[in-house]
Length: 530
Image (cartoon, rainbow, N blue to C red; front, side, top):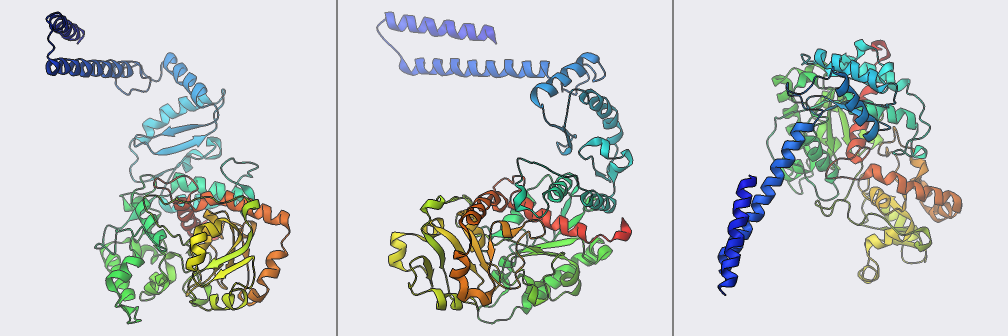
């Protein structure tokens, strides 16, 4: 390669000399030679760099490199552990799956390395069990490190019930949680253990086709990210702890509902036939009568689509935006309340995030929207009509008003954002308020708030009973400024748990939904099994 470069450079210099002294320049040939020289230089650097990497890597598994048993190699690895990861260390298996995470110090690093060398040989032939190693390693008996799915769930339940106390965690803000120690331990175990099998059955667009835009986008985003998850999805159903029914209630409405018919029976019958099909085709549904299966549906009709199949309605874990206790479908403690998120631009789901500081929020309370359902007309009756300067309550935002200040700007400029139910209990304004750092005021009796099994909503929101709408302003003004400032700050802190990321981030909305499904599944485990 060096010889070729020297010859090319010599030819180029000779050409330049002849052309310049001959008072004639062939620019086409000159540019061609310059391009050849540049490309040759780049290729030479790439080859040399690649050679050096392959020659020097202490992690190369090729037999020509020294064995891990040699003292020099172990010292080199330990040195890299101390230099690059002073506080934490992550071990990857052959498929790049995280199987162990724990603190590393100078006394334990070498002992861990010796154990991992012998253990890696034992684990090579394990194909049909769940790999589990927890933090820290001494707390986990060796016979617990490899468990079948049901045994792994029982083990996780015990671990969560005896979760160690968390005094401080930079990624979790304790005031937002009912018990931050329980949540942290549960989330760690979910990341280590949980495997989900996604049924391939079902024709598009109702199945496997995420709807990513609009107020029902939560079900589509979860479907999209679940399909793309290498961490949680398994292709072997025998390794699965949960089974996902990958249908879209929104797509079902578009494909099956006859506009104006007010007949939802075709939707429930369609889903009934689908469940019967997978129950006949596979053994997994009948093993538990569907109790280890889950669905995610954000459409208002989500609860009504499951009523055609008794086991589906009674046993399956249902993540629903319409989490209404009064209708008898949603069961608190088993089912999951799904946040309703409005996605206007799927390519930029986090657009307009953030809001004004408290001193730039002159509006006490704001709402604008359609007047459907039982709550909104009452809200407008008492607080609409422009009779109150600090209470901005509208049917829809008037054109003249929106020209001066948009809907989003109103939310960013308000202390409290009113989130009344419409036809159903949930409202996308709850998450919108969190996005724009406005304290949500939720008015919807019988509504189970999203992630209420782990989040303490009283820390960052206000729930007002429907009967107290006439006293709304009085209630808001009675909140001391110090308490409001704390709530508003907590809204900022909880925001990370309600964000859709194109690539999931730990503790974001995708993880929170999956964690609630996992957590509620563990809560179904009877004490006799433990």
